[in-house]
Length: 81
Length: 81
Image 1 (cartoon, rainbow over the protein chains, first blue to last red):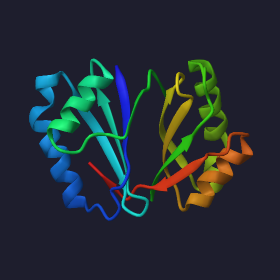
Image 2: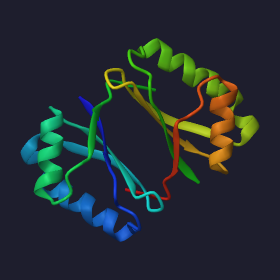
Image 3: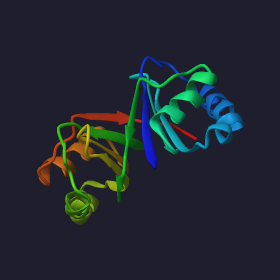
């Protein structure tokens, strides 16, 4: 299933910090059956969006929590165009 | 520039409705210099995310407004991985 998760409060996030967070997730994601496909960040509003393929919302959160950045919202997005 | 816009209140949106909204945007987007690349929907929470390449936040909103579904949030997302 596809999920879009959202992180708030990341004001000022840099490209390097986004890459480091993504790399940390990528290192352990397979242990939870998750694959993070893409992520986008708005440093001004401090918002980060992550698109993943995962077995459940909980699995997405386990990866983000283990790497120190739990998501504030996790939405199943079964529809896409 | 890349933008992620968010629509709330779309509870129960169907695949057909998402495709129709995307098709309506696609028909006029070039008039505003916008290209909507991908969109994802969560019918349960009624949330829709649209990723676009556009000259400005206002241009994104002009397309969505002209087709009858203005966005609730539009974030510039200069960073991506």
